[in-house]
Length: 295
Image 1: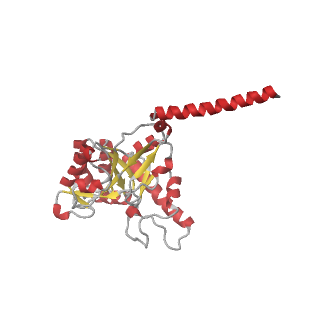
Image 2: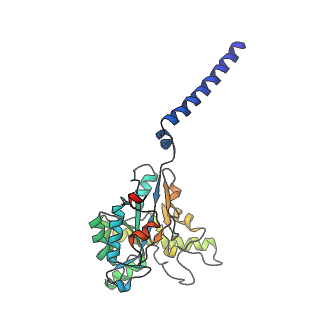
Image 3: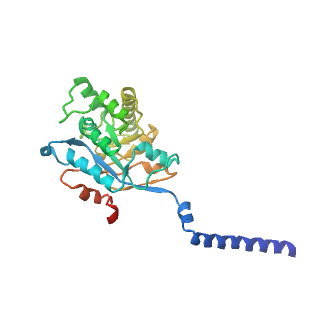
């Protein structure tokens, strides 16, 4: 019995010794603490809409072409690389690493200006962007053939060209829910008094229709749902997940944290609207993007 107790005491002492040695090892080599913590990336997302050369048209949702070029050059000068939803999904799954300084550039609604003005600048600066497609807009301008850059949306052929360029990742912005209180509904929001069953059926049908339209006409399969107007309801995220979306984006102005091994961190991503009237430095400072000497 005494011998058995001595063995237990020795085992306990060894366990304590191992713990002490481990603590000293961590203090001696701080990198081990970093490696044992979850790997994360800070992710600011910029929300662009229309881009035009006419400065008289500039406003909250229309940016001069020259200003967009300055934005991209500023991001380069600060050492930032652009990423897509696919990059984020791969990082979270442990399939791909990401640089420390990343930013996502999103263009909502699918204006023709994305092909005429944005694409050349992305190629010039070696950047990528996420384009949110409203299926009904694309179909309307495919049928009409109107490509007036002042107001037109991209046709399905134009969207396919952008996807094939390798500079744009196509994502979903709903098929026919990008409306300001159409039939009393704002974006993807649930109507007052609408049952969750009816809301789920309506939203699922619209999202599946857009998936099919984008896949059929461009060959792309959206993995993110970008909320029109940032409007959504408590059930929206789960419905999006059930439809196969791996990420959702809002209009909440907040910087995101993307964490390895945590796929839910890609839902409800915040974005900062980019209006005209601010310099690149002034706008990006709000997102915490500053030159290295000022960081």
